[in-house]
Length: 422
Image (cartoon, rainbow, N blue to C red; front, side):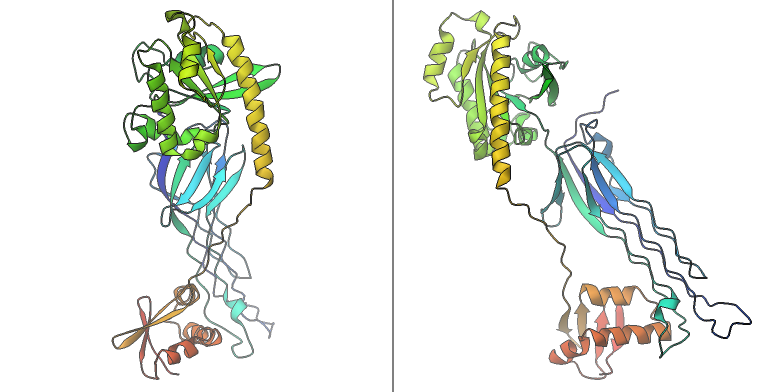
């Protein structure tokens, strides 16, 4: 059974946790310099999206809610490092965009076959006790916990990548035209809304290929949610050429054409700038000269206006020639635009350290502070002393005293409380 077409899913992705370090000591009776030999934990796996041409829907992710990569393994004695967790690779269609649900920022796009995007990083492995050996402490009896894997709520959105997007009102003949131009086999019937999902087809000629996409029929106010069109308007964004298909045998072909143009303009004004072709279908049902009258009534048209009969296959060769010509022109324009396009790399920033007076205590937050507290066993006296020294090294005492904290006051980090000793 064919999978339903799904072009948007919400997921929670989580990188694998890093493995804990190990507390261990060499056991060599004749080696007076034997000391700590605890190994580091392995790194957690990443969650990676990979574009695959053979995948054309997100339906395989529709029933998923949480996807997690493998955790890293714990370190061992004799400096043995724990195994790293396997990455989780999720296959998605080309044309996929990924957004952070928290702030709706674009994380990246996958537009080419094989392209990958890391959406959640695995946690680093914890250090074994040998890493904490110093002149002050020759035999540390504590290790570091593995870092928790990154967790993120994401929205995956598919915009089909096609050279030509066929748009028009329901029952304009889009599916019939696609079937006769390409190798596609869309559902065809004599009533509106036969197409409830986008259909893709490939037009091939002399080692050239054009991908055509037949989109579900638009209706008035589609950009506001009417009909089926609002679900699929996003797929027009990445088409190089728009083919406006009009039923010339309709009582109001000019109004039909303008409804579609207005909906595209309302959804995204940039669509009006796309290379376009207006095709009058069903010329076998009207008198000759109707196409010329129609062209005059919609002037200025966004591109050439030609008449065809998809059912009778009239003028389809002329249409193919126009499509090849316009598609090549659109690709040239796209190449020119890409030369000046600025590539932006977004970096995830760490939360700075903050001190907030709250009643009889001072609340501390910040990624560096939270990480120190979370990655050590603070019931272990040696680990607690190490954490305190590190907090002093990053200047935390200065921030506390500036906020009014004095020795004996309570400092809270997460759900842990400490007495400030100055």
